[in-house]
Figure 1 (cartoon, helix red, strand yellow):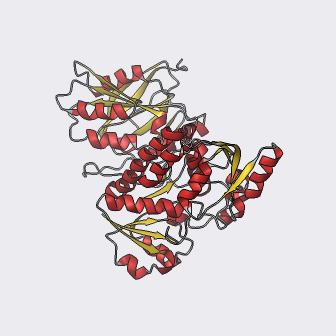
Figure 2 (cartoon, rainbow, N blue to C red):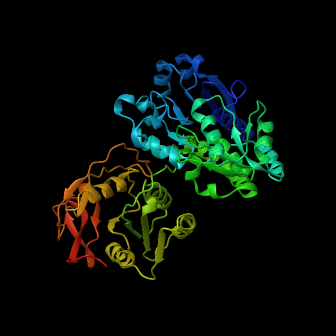
Figure 3 (tube, helix red, strand yellow):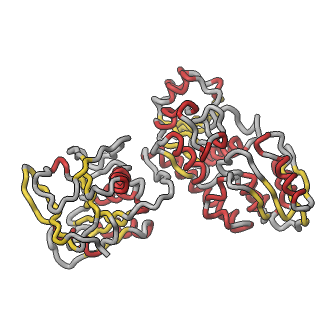
Length: 480
């Protein structure tokens, strides 16, 4: 592939965390056989953009990118490799309560929304971004990139003998809050050393020689490379709630374990960048929530032509981690089992049951219903393709409207197999407290999520213009 990196500065000009990360990404892509060139934002013209429509654009920091260049990039395949908060005029969410800015402070939203993906450094970073501009193409990379040489240097330095004192990064950037870190050390009456160097590996050496590192940023750090580096060097970190790395599960690791993790994460990040340009999709970040589980019921028979596309589509649902996908195989003569078992290894919330007979589609759904443990239920057919956020939209409607027991949406019919379904907004229709859903719901309105507030229900077959179904509620009370 042909990559063009667009950024305000590059590592040969500014030795910042974002610039170092981008430099490693470019080098890794070159090592994997891709063509990679660099273009400063201030020098990128509309003509250059339209002259490279076959390219994959990776946009880093873009403060100096002209409005005309931004509009031109919207016609290309591009990702935003986000290092801070360029959707805010002042790039500092800490100015606002709960990091949520008023709408008058938001900028560049369309540029973010139109990207194939907005790649963020941590879950903390993703949550702040989504809280402000509410887009659905955000991916948590869950880490940063270090070159192999830098990781090898840290593997040597981690063994250094450490002094009983704090390291304080001596930075002239105000929001890094060097003065606050010094006051912290003085308040707890502990010795400290101010560390700094224009040579990156010399800085790492200084960081490795003290037992503790204190870093108290005044603005949200999307990840904080220096904090992760301290952990990789076996140094204990004292910090505040503004460090993105602390939101990642691997932050509990340190030393050689964390170095191995970052080496693994580097490979995963490179693959994520490649994959989003190859396929136009990736597994996007969903903020943690307490959504009720959704049980997705699927009947399988002679589904070889659709199984791969179906599984890819269902697992890409924005709240799939809050779902259980139950596939009941009606003794199908096909080879679907291999693909399903591969996905089962990756997703523990996929349940696969193969029967020794064919009870029919509704019999399979009822078998799945006996297994279901979700508060909400829906069915999914192998040849269906859902908008990525469909289940999330449906679940939110039921959560926010407790008097509603069922939501459904329109369905579009296509003759194109395995089409990838991208749509920004889904619309739900409410059906209040139904006991029996009759044939008055035609097949054009058959994507349904229902509240599982019953002891037992059955699927029955009904005819209305086309073949469709209804849920027949046998008893109405809460499932326990």
